[in-house]
Image 1: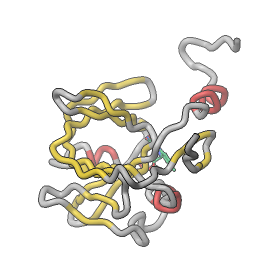
Image 2 (image 1 turned 90 degrees about the vertical axis):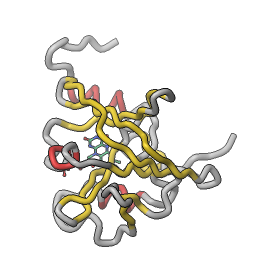
Image 3 (image 1 turned 90 degrees about the horizontal axis):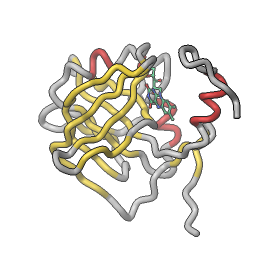
Image 4 (image 1 turned 135 degrees about the vertical axis):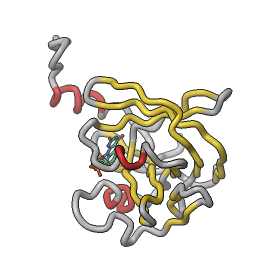
Length: 165
Ligand SMILES: Cc1cc2nc3c(=O)[nH]c(=O)nc-3n(C[C@H](O)[C@H](O)[C@H](O)COP(=O)(O)O)c2cc1C
């Protein structure tokens, strides 16, 4: 066991430890000022059925979240196998994140990425400050799923393919 300082933790060790947990990758996006804005987020978690809630954890340093959190609706797209370039684009520091990313907007301004395995039409329900992240609970207002499509997997800081056993 590696002992952790309760206040500072050991960021490098923790990053590597947390990356042992595999996840999917989502795109959390919306129209703001007539333009699509968004981030890639692997911290997506389904939370509640009744009421329908999901969560994402966003770094306190995010420059996009302060904009997204004020918008009436957010689109959450669970990315599919082969959409690793889309995930990387949507996390880019420079340039137009949506340049090569086909998307469409809902009537209320949520932005959904084409070829995703799941679309959720969400609004911000509440936020909890949690250390260097914000846990954002999102209320789900609508969905469109494609259970036949294979999701993108993120594990060990790399994109991977799901293999049937
Ligand atoms: C695969 C992948 C998963 C990511 N997951 C998260 C996440 O769960 N939470 C988060 O805050 N940032 C995550 N990021 C980083 C964001 O996409 C984005 O780069 C970051 O928020 C900085 O951009 P911003 O300043 O526009 O918010 C992830 C990036 C990648 C490539």
